[in-house]
Length: 268
Ligand SMILES: [Zn+2]
Image (cartoon, rainbow, N blue to C red; front, side, top):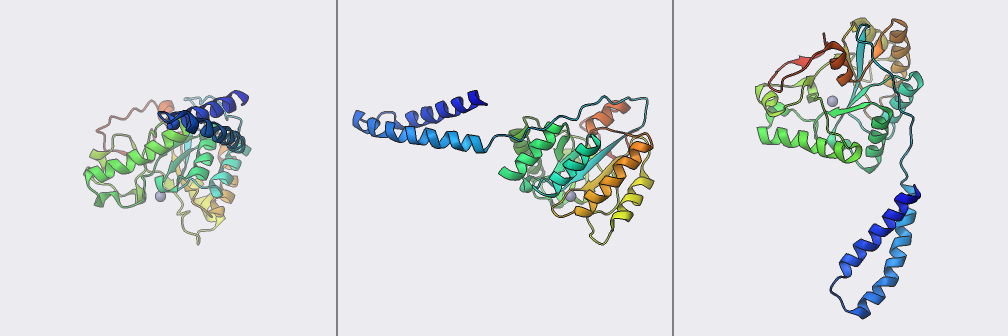
């Protein structure tokens, strides 16, 4: 950590020096004093922004046993996404988050990075969460690239799978995006009228080996956090292993060609 701070201070000094290049000596002297002040401020700022350190959830998936993937749409945010992460941590299971670009800011980005550090997968749910079937090819590509840029900025990795908003697709949407499309079994957990018990039973009854479960970590969706706290232990008891979407595909030996227009709910 100390080393990072020194680098940050050096960078601040260097940036400042660069700005003052080509100015008179007198001016430079004046700016030296300012540089010192600036460097101190930077050190304090770095201190405040120390990353949240989490313990990675690590386990190997046994491909000879049932595997499923938990996925969450419409984050990231600093409330519900965090609560979902806590439940996943409680049972030490991995999941995947399909994020909306417009929801990623400095604060929610840190939560997304936290999810990544736990070992969860970050995937693409478009920038604006609009009907992509009504967009041009360039607009569709821009939506995907925007999310990729931000996810890469925070985690260092691009997204690997795409879930179309409202599961709305056509040939143009498929042709414009070269990562696999994911759907999943849902329980309408975006609807506040669907209670916790219904979310649990509706999800569990649709699960079999290879299932992708579709839930939402949208801000305020506390009923899904509660349901998750029942869904995970019940499915663990039934012998299911929870993998990221990538791990599910790997376990099932399924590879997707970029031109493949399939949308996956079960990976078999
Ligand atoms: Zn969505």
